[in-house]
Length: 304
Image 1 (cartoon, rainbow, N blue to C red):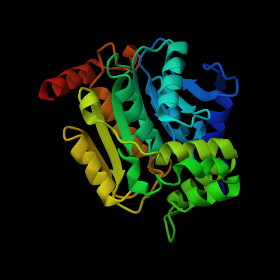
Image 2 (image 1 turned 60 degrees about the horizontal axis):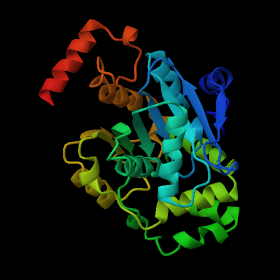
Image 3 (image 1 turned 30 degrees about the vertical axis):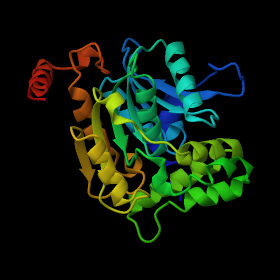
Image 4 (image 1 turned 135 degrees about the vertical axis):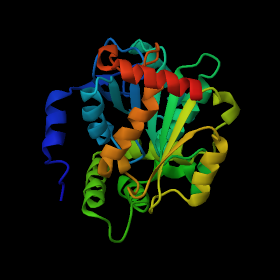
């Protein structure tokens, strides 16, 4: 139990990367919690957005690996927002506060949906340069919960946790996936009633992505072939929505591949980010990019 929590990597992460708390709204209770690691000279970092059950810590393996390669990475946790427009407005204020003009977003499940909605929300004055969508969706109606979305705020925390746990993998899984599920259950336990209820509300409120508003954003879709909370129809819908997206498939990984298949996920992130090397939207310290890599990324651009 809790193999990840006692792992040297996780403890190194917790002891070396400080957790920051930032308030950007008039309401002081709305606190963004985030880990900001890597070279601060990079002005277009990769920002990680967690799923319903996740906190900023769930991407610790991405933070450690990517900063080691020279990237600037921000992993965050949302305040309580009950409405998508309210979330997008708060996130825009956070980017303003951090003095970030454009960013790359990695979103897992709900995080991926919010990343798409934010790209859509800012399409007239773009703030999102690219998207990496992991086990994500584009239309909340797939969960068949739109009719209950407005009552989550009334439900007690134990019932909300039961709803979320219902989507976790059941049956035999490999040890790494079991460790990932244990870790996510622990993270879920750390969320209070309003945090959980607001995230489930955003996850199930009747809404869908309008792809024509974000057609100029580079997209990579990461998904798994084994059991996850997403149906095959939801995955197919994502492919239809982004016909030019790069697809990164993992044979296994369940709902949380960034925890239990981190080496593969980190590799796919690197491949996605390579196309921006040598541009003002690079998320990496230029000194960490070799001439060969620069040449490869310029060739990649000309092929794309």
